[in-house]
Length: 322
Image 1 (spheres, rainbow, N blue to C red):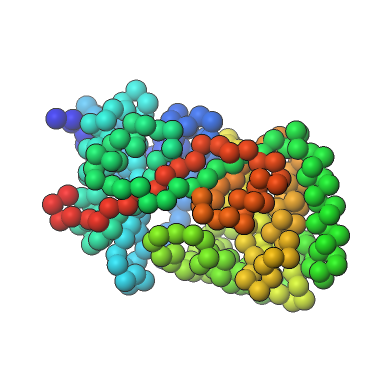
Image 2: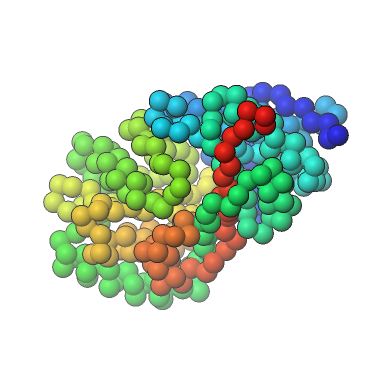
């Protein structure tokens, strides 16, 4: 049998978690400052617990689960996370880790369990399948070479600016918006758009305080957070996250209000974030989205984004025996 122990994680383990994820996926590093920030933040919508996985007294992995508060759900569900250092990673050990997280989440009351794997991670996929999970849906990731596509982006930006002027849409960064209600307006637009993201499990509404925690995380900057305004209303947002220590600049979120879709606002906002990134000396950016989100897939392709390694979401019904 695989001998693994699980001890409760502390804030001091956040750097280890970021380093582990970076060692596993060096092409997509995890920033330790951002990782610790999220470990520090209490959430008023989601419940999460984390463990450090040990073998023979040595820290070799991280494990966790997260779920919305049960009162917000008709069918209690949650997601399990976790992995092991590259030299400690084998099928049996990964299955033990997954089994323990399933047990912990089921004990909390979950009836459905989700877990993810990169589509090129055959070992993790095998471990997940071995635990009885079934593939649910796929997410796409993209990367854009800003130097190679600079002329294309500049041309699209000029066209989008002309169109926004004709549409009566103003594009500006959040720091330049002086409306005292701007944060709540952004929150409402975010939540409306989030409900339209393709998904199997229902999306639980984020609280206003939760959005503000997201906005204040170390990779976000209000002078790089672009909004679209029509009259007094915020009708679109797009923002890139800039990791302060390591990682690739990437789209944190792009959204538009339902009533303005089809007017090119999402494209215009994304163009502004990319032009700003070029001016700041960024050489490439990444983004990700559900594989069934056709409108954003089309925008990404037209901008020159190239497909990157995506991820697979898996589901299973929880069993008391797990």
